[in-house]
Length: 301
Image 1 (cartoon, rainbow, N blue to C red):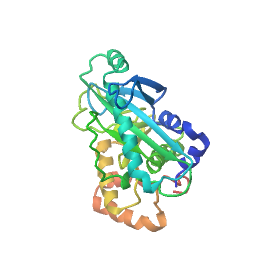
Image 2: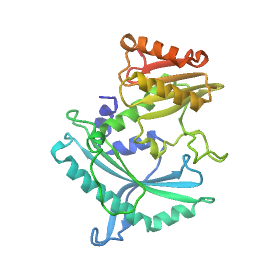
Image 3: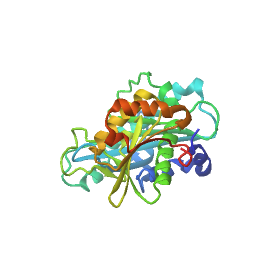
Image 4: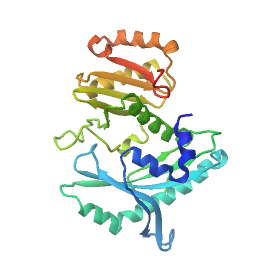
């Protein structure tokens, strides 16, 4: 288990705000009430734990509205009741987003910005515990459940212990390894953000990265740039080849160096495979500046 399990214990129920600050979602609106548009579900208001919005670097001229709900416990995940509890919490958050769509808060947010073509209204369900025991990966367990709520929204993301630890450990690894550098999130060019107005990196982590299998970061200092690709899953030779291609594409082969990190990388066990993949990749100018490391052990690698 990553370092964030310790952080959950230190921060307790404020763990989500602490995490949001780390990913650049600073000063979210917290513990607000939104007038309910479905009075059969909520008679008067929908309470929300938090709301954050930003200009989406992944889609041009777009506002990203995110309503989040925090569920925190000192007990392990109740595996026998996980599906039922998730559906209840999902519906509760979906209804809050439904009411947000018609709220004065949303209209006020949109009016703050100019040259905006569209907006997305999404949700994040943080479901965390500090038990230190039991299963920590709910996303895989819940991947195949059916959710037919009939509520209109643009997507709800689940963040469990495994997910929040991955993002936290990845960012802390970059900050430690490159402590005198400027650390940014990299914004992929995806065809929806390829105009000159969209930044290619920044301090705000896009919500789309919440459930991604990788977290792309950039460490820069003066004219020196390093591309960092962090993977949530353990070392795999096929994944390494894929991430090498992604890193080369992101940097347009112009970065000074590249780091690809896994949670379990062991130089003793995996270095022969890494060297073999480097030969197969057949681009010495890129692979000579490529390092594969373990983000849970950045000093010893």
